Image (cartoon, rainbow, N blue to C red):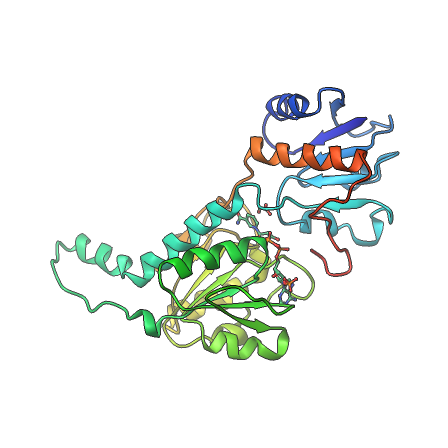
Length: 308
Ligand code: NAP
Ligand code: GLV
């Protein structure tokens, strides 16, 4: 079998040798513009359209959970091409760590204590009460459920929002557009871990952010396009939103001079909440390729009509 590899950044060699170790009989090569020799599979991150239209290609494996950079090609994608996303592959633990750190930091008033330290102030601050601190998670898929488990473990009351109802221990399930307002109104901290689709783009717009209780905290670990950045900044600066931890942005890298860099109530990280772990990800992809070669079903196939 022939497998193409494409990732716009980083050295391909360690990825190719790792994949080869799992699929010793496969012929692997880095894809370049103009390559026309047929191939069966591709392992990619942010692929150009030409690669997705490569002769013979049956299945493309995305080196991430979010497939928005593939589906953005829309109607130009070949109809019969299967798209497979990473299923956790070590991202769940990373997301749980990152979001728990952000929620706990705000809940335990660490930004206030950091400000006090700058002024050499030793002062008691009234702690937040967990009974009045429900956390809402937008997106209860592979990563959202792992985040929910971690927050529940710390004793937070967790609400989850998704398209279909979920039965997750310790989590109250809110479903669809009809229950979005109730969900937002009950979120003292809001976590966004939705896929980017036409239905979710801009979901954290001014109107929805204003539905959060005054003094809420926002954490976005999904995609920058979920957020109206001007609206979020204005609501942080007028105090309706107490602060935000943001890992993803409309433009990445976040441009120099962007107001988020200098807003003390906003914490910026460079899209690292959950990174693709080479070994576990390629082991997962190789396992799926072996299954496909044996005619067996695989998990993680993207439903193009849903957009994730
Ligand atoms: P997933 O398993 O596909 O889960 C998506 C969840 O969103 C599902 O619960 C789904 O509902 C819900 N959803 C989708 N559209 C919706 C809508 N219109 N209304 C209500 N709920 C909706 O995805 P995942 O693996 O958890 O990953 C989520 C996203 O995280 C990725 O797409 C990616 O963009 C982002 N991500 C970011 C990083 C980072 O480092 N910052 C790393 C990895 C992933 P149903 O369950 O009902 O289908
Ligand atoms: C990272 O952002 C991913 O989608 O895996």
